[in-house]
Image 1 (cartoon, protein in one colour):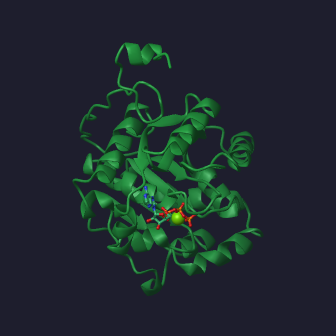
Image 2: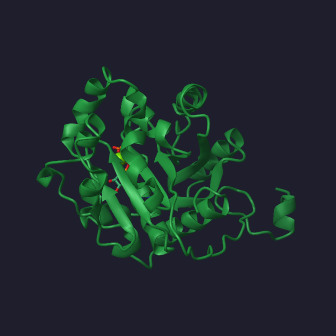
Length: 291
Ligand SMILES: Nc1ncnc2c1ncn2[C@@H]1O[C@H](COP(=O)(O)OP(=O)(O)OP(=O)(O)O)[C@@H](O)[C@H]1O
Ligand SMILES: [Mg+2]
């Protein structure tokens, strides 16, 4: 096999097969807000959306950014993953969506044990919202309305979506500046992405022209297998400018951290998994995807 030009020049190729840029530590912020709002979306289940919201959020918080995580999944894994017991809550994002005047979003937001990191929790009540919102005026804008009063108090708001392209996810896209699409490094990873991109384009055209795809994040990557590297290559070929250089490797530390109800950033702070999300935070900031 003839070595590629990059190999001959001895350039460090990252896991996505492209030269790996440096992502320097961003400058400290001396004031906060207005927030850039990002939705973590993939209608495929179990691709690492919630894990990425929690740990990207914690990594941005570690960089001194004020971060709000929004749980928009009735399964409430994001809330639980930050130590909030969803069953103890009387008022959640559901009540705000259905009646934003009757509740104060600040009273529903909870602080987490991580400094600078707050959560707007959900619980199973949210499963009714999809059907109930259908009859509301401006039904796609309910979440944007909920977030408006606090958007100036945070630097980044990240929304954890459920694995569907239904009305709740459309609400997330309508409220957002950016979308991050996590993709599991598996065969068929790209299946369904065309439909997702179509949905994003419809929201851009009809509701929210500022919406952009911030990036595609390859998750559960096993760099030792040819298969995972091939999948990675195919995703880069399909979306040359969109794939983050940072990839998230498969490691059991992530399920462990979910059980501990903490971000891996604090639960296993010095692991490669924690460092990968720290690098993703720096890459996102260097791309202009966060302050
Ligand atoms: N990089 C990783 N390595 C190993 N396991 C992971 C990794 N990322 C996430 N997981 C585990 O995979 C499972 C699914 O992850 P996660 O809940 O983040 O996906 P999701 O896309 O939010 O799923 P859903 O669509 O059901 O909401 C969880 O048990 C999580 O702990
Ligand atoms: Mg999830």
